[in-house]
Length: 281
Image (cartoon, rainbow, N blue to C red; front, top):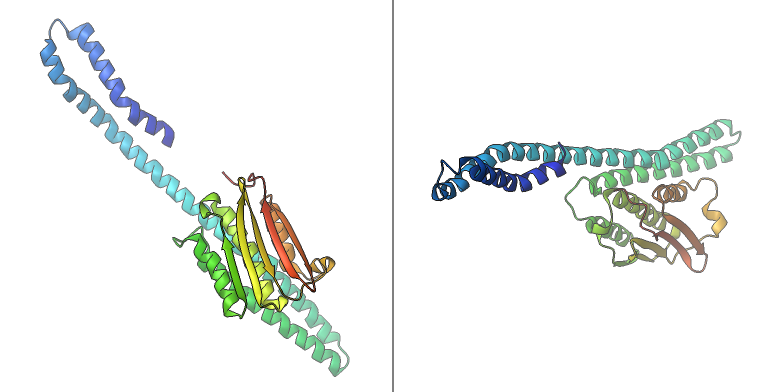
């Protein structure tokens, strides 16, 4: 029996029991039972009937609630595993593939100069994989779907990470986490984390704006830095896996993802859900 049906039965049962007793009393028992005695017996009979039936219904309600909680926990665990799998695929697996290509190049290098260049490229890739592994571990520690920590703590954590790396962050967050589902929180946080990490690693910036505001039923989130931005075509160049990952995550939620920049104005990443219909119910 569904949770809703059990609630309605609990609400209606006392009324139905009272109605049945009054009908039987007046139509059948009135010649044998005085009005005064019937009035005295009414609350006891109704209490006996409702307690007998409601006790079972309350047990069923508790079991249903436990099943719902277990289902939510399983869903949260699945979303966390899905998040980790996507991060491994989007970041680490591509980096390892790139490393294998560079190892092949190292083996084919004929002179010491070519070997030195290939070796340095491999070292850079290893450092990149190391950063990705650390970031994936951090994601698991701060995933909002499986912890009791307020989601804003994870957003402030992104700002703190940037501050710790010498980037002054202006946090302008006006979106309540109650407006987002658990999956929306996971996906938006992953996109923002990748954006901030790109600023730390590549932008050579000293200032960063991390902002979000509600738009109707949706939102608009922005990550803007003052670093050495790139032309738009450079963002989608071969090997820019992080940007493609952010775009794919946003597309999977029905959001609009844009990235723009110039060498004079830095880079701006914008995620917009202007319809609010990308939610999972």
